[in-house]
Length: 293
Image 1 (spheres, rainbow, N blue to C red):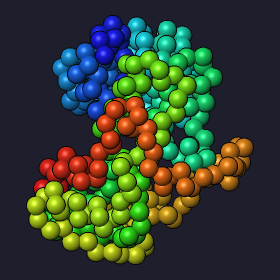
Image 2: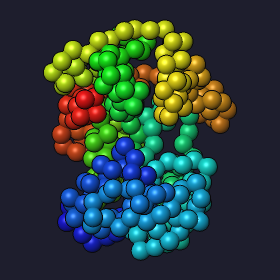
Image 3: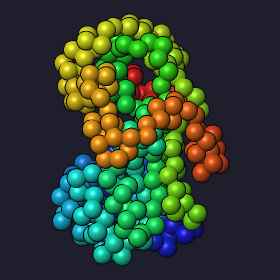
């Protein structure tokens, strides 16, 4: 990946779950990395990274960050996508890699960011992960640390999850290598995993039992709302009290061909792009063991 030393790459969402991994991988590859964040003082990124202030919801604040940039890792912010992409094209950006979602592959909704990039004339790649293995970390970690217990419904319902490091690995390959233009990669782990299996894997990583208590959706919602933050914000969607995709899922914008099975398949894209199998949930649990202590 010597090509990375010849270009400047802007990473948006640089302090996020995936963005930090993207930044670290690009730095290791020798790329000239500029990181966009709303709060540079708290970014805590590698010292060789140029950290700049900007907010994707306010496109004008991103214009300066795009100057001299050849490639962009774009975190999806739907309402400002066309303005941000237009600014990128005006600045001379040649390639954009979009962090999207597997729900687009399944036809459950459309992503205006994908459309904006495709219609821009720039080189594009869409990275569409299934559920993040990390999504439940913020919800479960407090009770695991305090009581070594998880209280959640859906004990034996299989989930298709992917390690955030694998998402970043695919995104970085698409940023640095040729041959990914016009591709949409759907990313999963190596197999489906249930809530009960996830809790057991966390216990194995800790080296001590973590108890699982299955509770009703209503009680889980109450606990998550009381927890605040991400847990409170995501409770209704994660627990099925609201439908994912809204009107788009019903075909209001012409995307009526839904394929729920696409979200339950193990996709080969991580291995095809990176040359290595996707990480398992057990590996993820070991990577995050400090979060549960």
